[in-house]
Image (cartoon, rainbow, N blue to C red):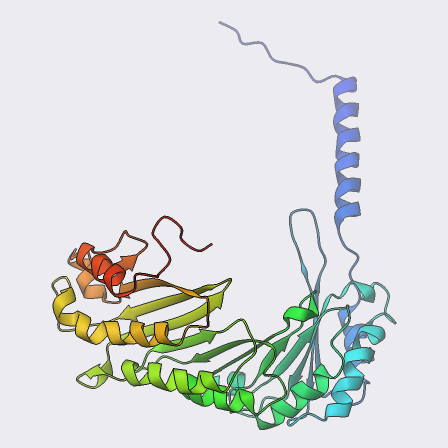
Length: 340
């Protein structure tokens, strides 16, 4: 049997060639024109206060978002007036370069003074876009950056400046970081405050989604007192994350019992676990409801198939833990209506 072979005639070849031209033109039209990064760096480097420039630009193309941002370093501690001037002059300066108006993210960062991993944490940053930056924010950031713990304060202005965020991660307890944040002029921003995890202490993060208050310090000291309860030299808590959003306090708690290879018994280990959850619940803002995810953070227990890695998870965790949670916190978000 002989198979038929389709011949390609002139008309087909002409159609294919025309289609290729159309595709090429379409892709060219979609690709974003890219400025000369070296030229941008030279122009920006001449601005008062700038000590170094990283002008990264990868144009947007079909199927890709690209990367269009400039990071400039300034002295540490930063000069407030220089930073105020840079917030305005930096976006204007890049427009002097052809296609420089494509940059959509600008970061002013303090000069890194540490070594190794400490150098990363020693820099503070203010990130904003081509839109309006709240008046005086640059000064407030500069003042805070001059007094911050060694890890640095990071402020980001999104397209809606009303939701400007501030974040700090350090080795100090959340209560100590809150005390510092309240001493700055940035307490009204949307904060994320975190404490690094160590071999004996958990990763802890607090995202209040509202202006900081003095009462938060006392509340977090109470939470930290329950976290410090330990087995041997380590806290049973490995992760404690508290986030308040739209009337719900979302709490994620991971606990570890290294010596226990069997499923955790609520009536035994619960005496150490529930005080952490209770302290988190007691400090909830008015008209908020608790939503807990309680996890056993034990690789060994999971490998042995103990089946209780998730102790409380929207009704799908371990039966006795889920029942105890509902009994202790009857006003918690119901299983049928988990927060989004």
